[in-house]
Image (cartoon, rainbow over all chains, first blue to last red; front, side, top):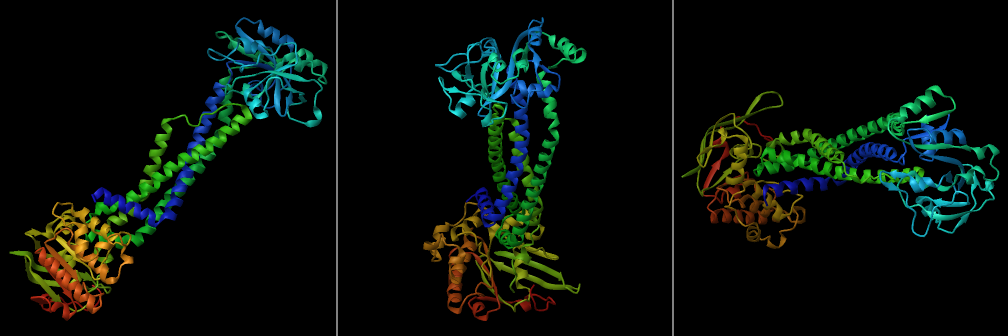
Length: 404
Length: 227
């Protein structure tokens, strides 16, 4: 048995001897590390994913109101529409120099809780939702016709509701599902959109006229749109923002989308801070538990250490036994923190996908993981220093119980 | 040739009343290589302290202890640890086996501290003390006599030059005590190891050619008690 093997044997024996308290300490570290990683990475991941999920648009034109509400409604299909715009507004912005693409949107109906979004078929023909990538329709399907009661179903919705090409459905009025508000119109599904990992997967796309002229909708619906998705050319955004937001009072031009979303995430900083402080608190408790476990074990292991010293073990060897024990506890905790993180981020990304259609990638490797791992191990080792110092100072003679 | 040479050795402790209490005061003491020496003395008279001083577990107030020509008192802590691992085997009255480790592991751990090539084979040694079939037993799974034999094997595993035995039969019944003494002497004789044994038991001391009295050797003013 080499010195290293002897050291390892003594460390693992120490952990096994105090298995329950060691496990509690490791679990506390795992919770703390996992919470910290989860808070940080999920927020960062969500912010990146939301920013990238602007579906290739630079701006949204909508009724007068909050820019954020407009973006959440038109891009992420969340919250209620702040109001409607005249169809004419769509025509004006579409023909404005500096506007590369413009697509009208109309909302107001759902099927089983999933929104029906009316738009022009050109959105799926011409628009690149990611640079160089257009929407794809799964084999056997096609794009809806602008004058027919046809639907193109987002991939997520199709999977959730088990919809396929040829299925028929009747929409329900409003953005939330209420059984009694069923429309009479029957739509036929002509295509399933290939998965994009963007909010487009989470809605049922229909011709805009379908929403505008849906039976039971007010007559003004037929000449209005809920919002216009805009892709700009060059620096036209400044001029349009000036025109709509500063000089005009009819519409709001939500531009740039990324900056507006960043403001939204900045508003959540307090929540992130709270979770961060909870993680620090749990981390401190974990360190104290390690300290307490090792200190308690020290009281019982003094005799064992004195015997080892009497056999020739050096002070440093004994110190390393205690530090090694804290290293094992913190290593287990650090590995556990990744498990906690994976569970947390798995749940969070499922929830975000369900609510927004945005796909997070919790497994995306980041140097943060390495730093957090090292910090956890380092903190564990630091917690082991006071008991290791006690071990270093063990008085052999006193603890060997002199007998004569 | 002398293996152990002690001169003007003195060790005192502070009593609970705050007085200085001298427990070891030895003018001269020597042990030759391969010599067996038994020292009698009453319990609590300072014999264990004397052995701890020789093993470098305690530091003296003054005096010199030379083992194999090296002055233990002038050594650094880590040199003393290494000397203890390589040159000294210690047999305790209460055996002091590591409870969480098997017989074999108790020996292997001891070997890891000395880390030199001149070591006995732990399997052979355990077989020699009659525990060849119990190498993977933990101390609590062994009888008292068997535990004592593991302790003897552990003291000799690094082939030390000097074995210090502190009341090695104190916890054994007369039959086991006699067997244990016989085994200890036999093992030391075979390996030409110097044996220095302290005991309050006259029967044990009578086995030795060289016999010493602690009360005559140490001129300390010690009172009886745990020292």
